[in-house]
Structure formats: structure tokens, C-alpha cells
Image (cartoon, rainbow, N blue to C red; front, side, top):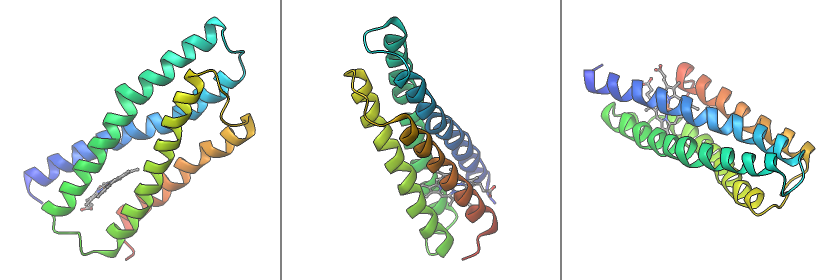
Length: 143
Ligand code: HEM
């Protein structure tokens, strides 16, 4: 493997770790946020935390993960391999989770409660399941 490929892979791993941190922590913040009343000091603080986590970490990290992943596939000539096609589909699932959370950040900022606490707890598990399958796919490359 060339030095370039190794650097791109290292940056890809750093980027997806940061993206996953956002996808795991945002639903946690939503759960805490939904436990306090609108208009309180805590509610305003959660709004700032949610906005900053989404805009300063999760969204840039997602874009970097996707760009570096696509580049890695090109550099290593892997775009014809089945595991990468399935992985890309699952990554689209993660991106959809990201999109839903971005909508919820907006809804919470407008003092709405877009999902029940139980719903949020269930939703919290979805990025984890996708993450586990993606990492296994990339390591074992069964296809
Ligand atoms: C469009 C999105 C993505 C594309 C196209 C992509 C593509 C790739 C490619 C081509 C590799 C090199 C694999 C190898 O040569 O062994 C790689 C490595 C890796 N990717 Fe991604 N990736 C994407 C997103 C993600 C995401 C979201 C995660 C985690 C949630 C992830 C986790 C990993 C891991 C752990 C490795 C390192 C595997 C190793 O050590 O060899 N990727 N990715």
C-alpha cells in the first residue's frame, strides 16, 4: 500500500470516529433536552450544544468521511468490489440518520419536541447497528 493510501486511510478513520461521536451523542442530548421545559436556561443551553455538535463536528466529519472513503476506493481500485457497494448503501443509512438528527436540531431550536423519549432511545441504537456491520464488512470483506 502506498504512503498516500495509508494517509488517506488514517484520515478516513479519524473522520468517521468524529462523525460517529456526533451520531451517538446528539440523540443523548435530545433525550436530556426533551426532559426539560421549553424556555428554561437548560433548554437554551441544550440548543447551543446541539447546534455546535452538529455544525462544528458531525457535519464536517461526515463530509470528510465520505470524501476520503470515495478517494480511498479510487486510489486502491476497489470500486468493483461487492463489499464496498454494500458498505456504501449502509453509509447512506448513516447519512439518513444524520439528516433526521439535523431536522431534530432545528425542531428543538424552535421549542418543538419532534419525537417521544422512547422513540429517541430506539433511534439511538440505529447508528450503532450500522456502524458494527460497516466495520465488519470493511475488515472481513465477505463479498
Ligand atoms: C462513502 C462512504 C465510505 C466509503 C466510500 C468508504 C470506503 C473505504 C475504503 C475503500 C476503505 C479501504 C479498505 C481497505 O483497503 O481495506 C475504507 C476503510 C475503512 N473504512 Fe470506510 N468508507 C466510507 C465510510 C465509512 C464509514 C462511515 C465508516 C465507519 C462507520 C468506515 C469505516 C472504515 C474502516 C474502519 C476502515 C479501515 C479498514 C482497514 O483497517 O483496512 N468507512 N473505507
